[in-house]
Amino acid sequence: MNKLTFPNACQMMRWHFHPLGFEASMDAPRSMVARLFDRATGETLLAIAGIPCATLMHAADVERIIEAVEAELDAFEPSCNLRAVG
View (cartoon, rainbow, N blue to C red):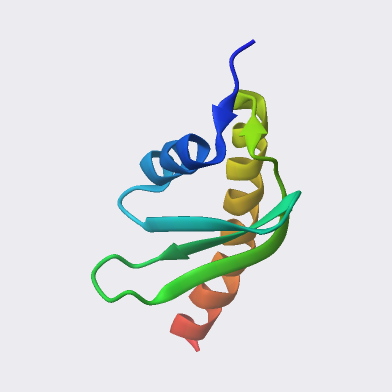
């Protein structure tokens, strides 16, 4: 089975989240910090620390990270919509 290096996995995640900006860095040997941001303003939309990862990952591992980031993003959308209404 092919494995992706951490930089290649991050590139896959950048492509997935485009047009939003995505950046990630390892914050410990087995975890990372991910940030989604508005490319036009640089404003951080979401930052998540402590996401389990490795320096070499299977595509399924990258998919799980993407799903976790999307779930966090979805969790914030209803509160943003409520503020816009109120």
